[in-house]
Image 1 (cartoon, rainbow, N blue to C red):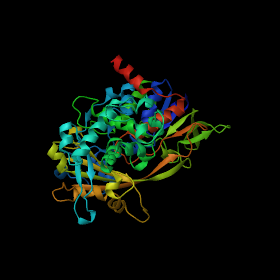
Image 2 (tube, rainbow, N blue to C red):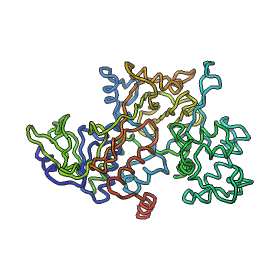
Image 3 (cartoon, rainbow, N blue to C red):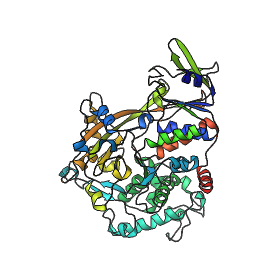
Length: 510
């Protein structure tokens, strides 16, 4: 017990509570910035809510008393199942953080093979199943895709070329593109004079209306490419919409040979928190999981509470040794919502289905894909929020050879009182679950259901210096999560990370 008391006896620039991906990432960033960081967790393993479970842990969590069978599931040691499965945008902020912090040196990544989009049957009451369409990668694939009419393919091609060609850092000059337009935007929408209308003054609805694209094309662009979870793109600045579409296009070509915009680490996302933990340790950070040298717990369920100074700012984190309160002194505390009862508000719930399979989706098999993402736009499912399907295999070292792990997730939209997780999942994830019940579908060897509430901090933390992350949402990519981390970093340090410059400098060093 002397070891943890010695650590608590020091004063720290920041104490971080929880070893989820966001917390470990912040711990690493703060350590790289020269901060003295103490990182604590009530669990005896890394990852918190974003941990990767082995197959025995998975069965214990969801099917206690029924151990997995190696005869059915293959080598049990080869399974690694993420509790918050997410892909990484190859051109996104997280990759820049990995390069800046050199954390990428501790891990291996592999591109995700395919990106797909779901379309509902024309007559939903007919009993037909919807179709999963591959997102086109080349002009040839675009011409053969059944998602768009021939006329719309021409319009889509011009639009995509325009999006790829513009500079989002110069919004004032966006609307003079004579190569694709007979007239500039301000003339065609009836404005008088020769004044430009920058994208910052248009919303997404106005922007797409002006382009004259079909509703199905706009849905595809906003939900599958710009990765909006709902219809919020309509009121978002057009500049934001275009920037998000550019991220998708840039991610597709970020590394050689990519056939989707996504990356995923070998052995699962549980590698991320541990990589950032190693990074923090290299820069002088101290990590303490909830186990002493003899394996006994250090922190009780009610420990790791906060102590405040007279001015209302945080002064330390309290642990107990019997009757004695031991305080780790700090003026900044960071953590996930589970550590801060009374300082967070509920923001909804996420429901997931976890499927262990011995065959891929038929569409994947046709394309030779071993991993993919399928996005189900909300309107195609009669919902307000999109559904996300995440599927990986032995190619990413998360399942034995010939086996696959799939996740379906979405935000819960209806009441849940008195309902089991399975009942919630069948109501909210019906369109996605149908992919496993339609004729010729890969029937799951096992199907588990999970639902969890999500939380956000009541305040931004700048007043009391307690900075709380938001719960992970239902998306199957990291962009919303990394934006939360970067926003927290700015509030904690008062500095904004210029990741483009930092990543470029780190790459140049290597």
